[in-house]
Image (cartoon, rainbow, N blue to C red; front, side, top):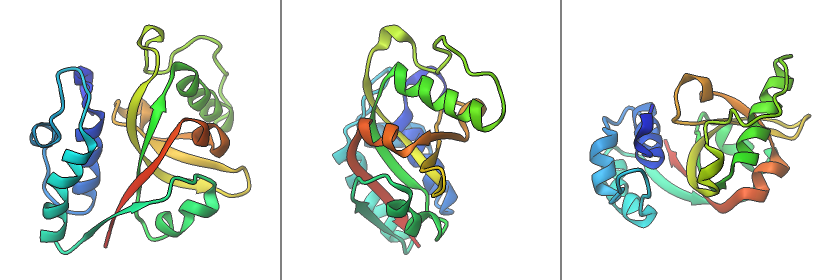
Length: 173
């Protein structure tokens, strides 16, 4: 959980590295990525800082294309490899993710923004993990670093594609 620090990138990298049995700390990763107070990470610095750590542990960092239909991500997810996905988050995207997840779980859909992102923040760069897919419904499962409530949410691939930066990474076994 990144808490209120705005450390989505360091927290997401920490989660992924620990998943791959590589010790990591979001505060050290924030320093490596030149993350500012309240967020804002230089991705090229984060990639450079983690690449040697990943290879020292016998793994490989790979950049993959930005297409989000389930068919495009299935090869990685089926191998147990989450995908680090960078995108432009907006309150409307977060509300859509929450509502789609609520619908799937038979819960009430909300009309107000209880999305984890304040309306006054507008849009901003963000990173989270893609952890699953459903080809029949054309949805992807995402996991955010905003705490337990955001551990697994489902979004339509078309909604995700609209906000995607087109750049994703996996750490390969």
